[in-house]
Image 1 (tube, one colour):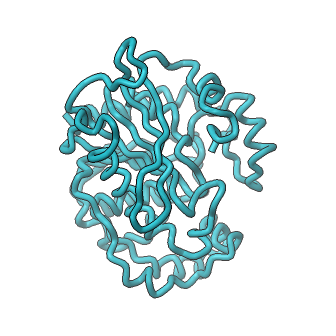
Image 2 (cartoon, rainbow, N blue to C red; image 1 turned 30 degrees about the vertical axis):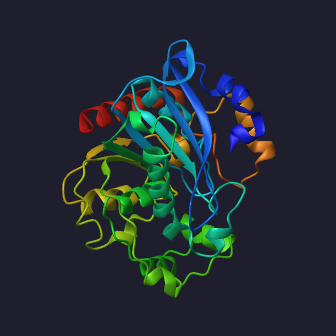
Length: 323
């Protein structure tokens, strides 16, 4: 969302100060979606010296990023930068109907169903149409998902949720964040018939996934993750009151133990790109989100310091799994 307000150059100045900007390049494209509007995708890649638009390397691994509810394709800039600097091509999609400008699919109860398909179409575009598609290795694809994006990543990896459990959850815990979110956006609590009969899109091209602060983990009870067999790195914030114990549920349900990390002092939005003072002001003034502390972290928690560790571990995981 931020690059639409600031422009790519100013955003780079605000968010990428610590990065070696000359080593990578970014571009924005519109990926076709035969069933819907084109998808806004932001791509980071290792840059060929002295050739601004040239991608450095062959047989490059690809990482696809899925943002959280109401977010956009620039919510994880620093993580994407770290991966690109390590030799990955990274593609982050802004999900149609579930982004900071457009929540129409949320209100129609179709955003959870649409996300996996949108991610699959993004991968299709990168592998077949993007100007450097021949430099990608289709056997080395990973996925990074945050919150609702983590839910989508688990589905892409083979998970099968039961959305009827949302109704049960909200009846038992009406004050839970996700239940309040549904009410705030006038979303019916009962799943629509189309949701209950949907065939969830899974993608065997994805070989490893990083799951950060997963939302709706309880919808995979009791066997919904039994067919997820790819390596998973799972992150949890000890002070995350938005998804509560969702990461613990996912950790318990996965058939193989994930590479699990818990940051005791992190909250939900601690996994988003650290905010500069200017960015913080813009979010609080131009993008009012009620009580959502997009840039705020618990007392004593340093998001920038945490992200140095977080990004390093994400790079290390994908490097090991997509060798």
